[in-house]
Every structure is written in C-alpha cells, then in structure tokens.
Image (cartoon, rainbow, N blue to C red):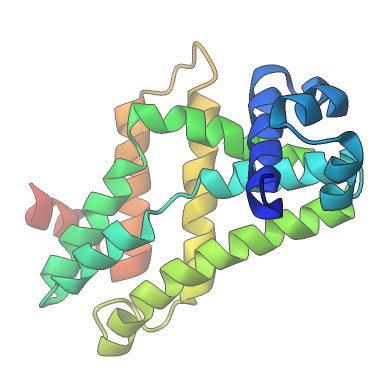
Length: 210
C-alpha cells in the first residue's frame, strides 16, 4: 500500500494539473481520489476538505514558479572575486527573468496569488512561501552587501521583494497586443534594478556593459 507521503504527493499533483487545465472548479475530489488510488476519506484526512486541497495545490503551484534557482545563483555568486564580477553575475541572473519562456511561470504565479483573495489562510500560506524564497535570495546577497559591493543604504529584503514584483509586472506587456516594446521594457527594468542595487547610473552601466 502506498505510504502517506507518496499518496499526498500524487493527490497534490493531480489537483495542480486540474487547476492548470480548468481552474479551481476542475478540482473534483472523487475523480482525484480515484486517479490517485486512494479513498475520498483518505484524501480528506490529508487535506481536511476540498478547500484544503485547493489551498495546498495553489500554494504548491506558487512554490513551483520560484523566480530564482537558488543553487545555480549561489554557484554563480561563489565565483565572484570583486564587485564587477558580482555585477555581471547579478545582471546575468536578471536577464534570465526577461526570457519569453518565463511568461507561463508569471501567469501561474499571478493565478495562485489571485486565489488568495478573501481567503486569509491561503493568503498566509502564499505569503510564507514568498518570504522563504525572498529570504533565501537575501541571504545569498547579504555577504556582498557587508563587503560594500552592494549599496549598504538599501534594505536588501525590501529590494528583493521589489524585484520580484517588478518581474511579475511584466505580464502587463505580455497579455496581448500592447504597444510597449519588450526589449525596451527589459532595458528600463535592468537599468533601474542595477541602479538600486549597485548605484549604477545610465552612463556607468553603458560603460561597463556595452
């Protein structure tokens, strides 16, 4: 008989797939339990209710859109021997978030966040997931701020949250026929982020990255 952890994972994966395909209305407890090979009472014991299952699925969807691959970013940062190399590493990381294939991740993330509206427990779960990611990125960058390679006068955690919001906002020019040129949006965003983190002016940025 499957153990509790594996059955929970199967149920959760099926609920996520249902939401991705048809929204929360597509989460049908009887169908998911049957496909997962468990009874409905077993599903309820693990998630409490259908709403509990939906909330867990939405939180997991949110977690799976993690903006930063911490292991990859940490490895890149570990190679930095001076401020200029740190700039290049951060710039490279930022540019990955502007790539077209990230569009789907942003859409899923927005969908999950929207699901927390007027649902305090789910909103709290999403906030915790977000904080864990933001704290992880902040801890990676903090040693460089202590060295003075990142501006010491900024709140690093607030900056990480702002960056995540900035990237999420890119969906506004990805929704359809929008007059904003995506490359220009990328350039403006990159310039702003580098200025906040490193104090780079447009002239400094042009000289370093031309």
